[in-house]
Image 1: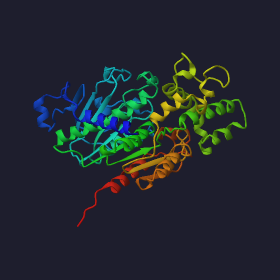
Image 2 (image 1 turned 120 degrees about the horizontal axis):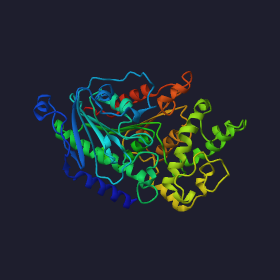
Image 3 (image 1 turned 90 degrees about the vertical axis):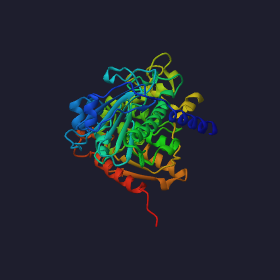
Length: 436
């Protein structure tokens, strides 16, 4: 534990003294920029940064100006959802030094991309986010960025340092790609604080980490390992790696049972429920089986256990159980070698948060279901003796992402309103109290 603490201190020290670089330029002439109250903004440690003065930093404006990518947030919001708009300010797009090239945004073909948004009317706060799944830096734009910009917060988001379905190719040893996620979030947080100091003339009075799914996992990790950077955090249906395996233990039984369900096996639904998936989430199982259960099992397993399928990479899609060596449907994490468990231990959460955290968890989440994810982390925090720092909220009928409401809109309910309410609660909870 001492070695890990020393490494974290070293990383933060390096981030804090990173050189200031600006290779980009404003998209308007300097004279016009000054007239608009818009300034060239340097980003600490960035290899490239491009500042743009925008009349609206929210998705209402950035979709038209080309400063977001709506494909990146496809499926994360109910179509037609009204989001805040009309927030002028400066957007900075860029990237930190990195050797991987999975993020193709802007034609850069360069990972560790980020976006920073600085509203003209700043409330003195900062929100930093990482994307869910294998998405990129614009994924949270309608569900987090729009919401907090409208309240006056500066906003920063990272692509986590690697993206796409082959993220396991990044790094030299099992777990490296996911470990980079944490480093990139901390790096951006340090840089964004320096940016607000430069642009507004002061550092944030409050800094919050926020995220959905894999982004929620990042929030928990940051509050466990880099608490000095944050005032608090909020996570939404967070992925939770633990020493017992997380997705690697919940997905294989679901894959096995659902394949039999398709063949009419009446015992299959009970097996999926026994694996932790909510019974009333059945309407989503087909979608998750086709789009996420199989893919995530193979990608995450390849990241921490590449030897399981020999020379293959990320196994065989939808491999039928007991048909071939290295079939991910047959995966048994408990029986894997100690080296695999060590790799998972590297990326596992502990529950030892050091800042206030609110977790919202959909009761019908069929990807990171409460029984095996949200409930588990809440117990971890309690077992660590830190329950007063954690508020855990079950959101009735909430799916993993709001886009899934379309599958069964009579049963499923969007969670975005609960996120907004929870963020308001986090503000109140962490607001300094005056002393007489």
